[in-house]
Structures are given as structure tokens and as C-alpha cells.
Image (cartoon, rainbow, N blue to C red; front, side):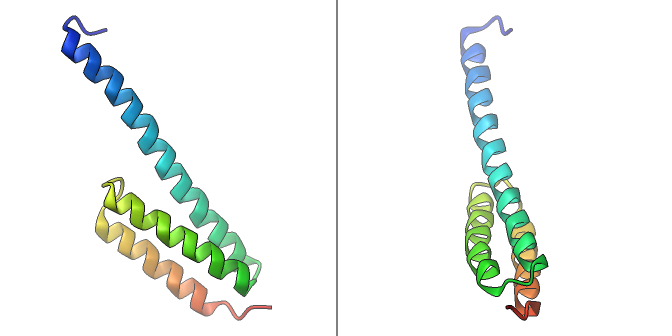
Length: 89
């Protein structure tokens, strides 16, 4: 543990921030996996709704600097290509 009071406070803040960032990244990955599952099932409606939430969380992660903006753009582009390839039920 830190000897200086301010560094001890910073350590606590870093723990909170790390937990929040980890949670947001995990949510983003989960939403992308849900989208991929809907695409794999060839279900157009489910894929479209999952696409909207996935894109939203990817944008939010990029805004909060959890991922790089170019990585966010690449992910969204890949998801859009997958969505357009789904023929649907």
C-alpha cells in the first residue's frame, strides 16, 4: 500500500475506474457476440436489433477511449458487412 495519503486515494480511484472500464468493455464484447450469434442463426430481425445495440456500445467505448476510434470503425464496418450478408428468415 502507498505511504502517501494522496497516492493511496489515487490507488482507490484507479481501482474504481478500472472496474468501470472493464465492465464497459465486457458489455461491448457481449453485445458483439450476441450480434454474431444472431447472424449465425440467419435471423435478420434479431441481427438488426443486436446490431443497433452493438454499434451503440462500440461507439460509447470509443468515446470513452476504451478502444481506439479506428478499431471502433473497423468493428462497426465488419458488423455492417455481416448484417448485409444475412438473408433472413
